[in-house]
Length: 290
Image (cartoon, rainbow, N blue to C red):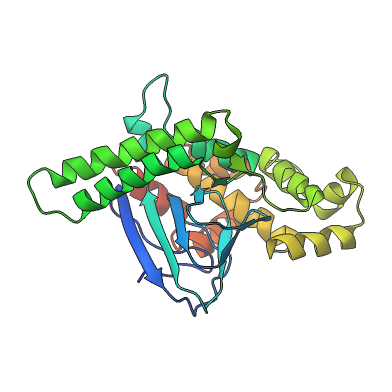
């Protein structure tokens, strides 16, 4: 059974390796809160009664649905504790796939597109699904094996799986397209605007004016759809994006201003509370001096 570790009020789990795999079957009694990870995640839902909420969108899951979650996506699962929840889960560092990508084939395409377009759920047609299940069977065998080369085979099969997920995401057949989730269209547009203007004026007044809503209506609908206040959601988004920029090597102060923080000392305090370390410690951990 997976027991995620709370490392801050909204962050769950550690990932010290390039990727981890779990095949989990349990009856959930814990009520998950909205959270994020500093890694990417694939969830392959097998059985149970589960609804996933991601970035204000609601996905009632069907067997063998696939969720694509990035380190920028705030999400939670709502689980019926009267059923057994079975799923396969991959945690991985995006840098791993970036290194394995080629000039013409970016393995992060399906994840980053799903996050940008708010279409996190992939539902495969029967033929593609059968291929996927065969791949997963082979991967699990390699994952559980101690034979020579099993680690190499596991790594290779994981990359093969990611290639097939990208192909399924990008192809035009209707059964193999990301599923558009139930969501209030106005709030979806507000979230998209926040993502696209993370360094700009995201005050309640500006957002309410932009979307022709009263401040009260915006705050009420946003909280209802996402579980967050507008202010808290924007703050966490800015910190997530700032952390992503710092990982990519952007200087800490530049990352803070790029993400809309006008006061550097306030940014440092918020960052440390959110990530558990200072921005400079975070930068050093992700870019150690050799």
